[in-house]
Length: 125
Image 1 (cartoon, rainbow, N blue to C red):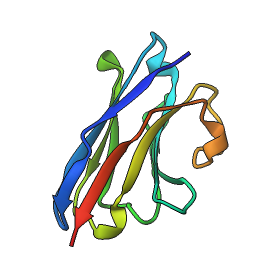
Image 2 (cartoon, rainbow, N blue to C red):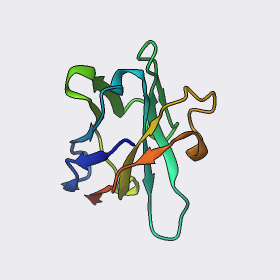
Image 3 (spheres, one colour):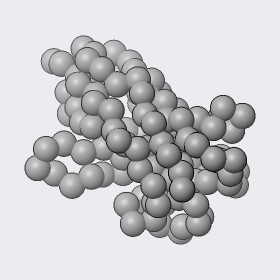
């Protein structure tokens, strides 16, 4: 079992930045694909970004491309989401997730085995 703990959320003005962190338990972190998703009330959880275990290749949703950066530190078993130029529409609960099986569908919720509890990000206009 993998436990994930997100941190770094908060309230920020539009145009500002936040960095989310997700600390993962377990010794196999370097073998996992890690993802970030977000969800607002009444909407389905949506893909934000992911980073492969194999070559650290990164994938982004169109809505965040060029503004958000995903990275990982295997020694610290932590994945990060640097969020710049934040917009009110980025307001959501952000979740990190782990894919232990190198799924092809990196943007699909069903590809991920374990989820964190989420951290709230609020962007004011």
